[in-house]
Image (cartoon, rainbow, N blue to C red):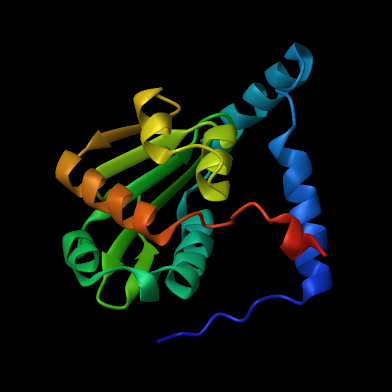
Length: 171
């Protein structure tokens, strides 16, 4: 089992402060939103391998050891595609016995999960119930529904990936 070291308290406090600010951030003004959309159009043309490799390494280090065996078995050999729709970032992962690796563009995704940046942020921080994000169509899931539910329920059981700091933790 991989142990994950917690960052120093001073760094955690600073990062949590930035995260709390981002939690309250309003949507960008229309002009900036159009510029971001134009940039995202270019980003979608880039290969997904570089961000997929980074995300696979992060998940393998932080989450894979905590995944229940039934989730690992359900993911084995399957491709999961994730997309940050407003930024055009695409990640394609294939699960193997030791964790995820980048999947090529040609591999057919068994499951696709897509959301704007704010939806992914709210999911990672635990600011909204994941069911609510899916039912409100903030997070969209397409493909193998059974695999999607298995993944969602397993992640629910793990809790927020980056929980909001309590007042006690901020001291």
